[in-house]
Length: 224
Ligand SMILES: [Zn+2]
Ligand SMILES: [Zn+2]
Figure 1 (cartoon, rainbow, N blue to C red):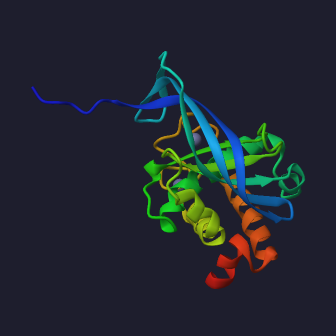
Figure 2 (cartoon, protein in one colour; figure 1 turned 90 degrees about the horizontal axis):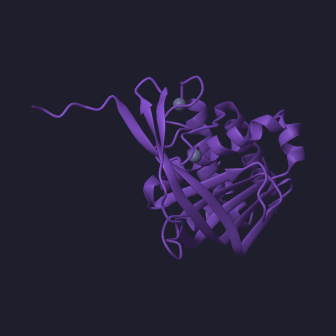
């Protein structure tokens, strides 16, 4: 008897909430704002998906597990609805665009911080209760924070230019594990809008570049 590779993979489905408890630093870049914040992350694994190799979801299994709470630190990006619409992104695309940008940013954070993508969590939403805006959170998955999100915030331009370039250079048509899909997504990598992520990242990069020196923007002057 030998172990056969299963014909499916499993991925946890998670309910996730991020609440901002303190703002440590803010960079207002026109229609885009970057912040380094303290957050409380509440999560609950609600089940898992079994997915066939083809990508087709086989079934969803429900679990009843307790909620966990993590007090940590996060890099927070917000964009105004006006700037997203102005860039041609209709509101229906915001969740997928923000989510894909979040995943890609998590994947590239190890470029500027000594971390692994498994050290980092994220949440994106078209409307966040605390910010009142389309928002992307990238947080340290350790109590009290581990300095990774802070490094990302401090190296915002370097981090997000690399993220944007990685997504744009990936030859897949609509997102793959090398660009915008995440192995630890609690939402089964849905929705994801690869082209939308490039629009979102370009908006943030453009805002940082226009801001010029100082704060997170200083990194761009060094690197371009
Ligand atoms: Zn790809
Ligand atoms: Zn996700």
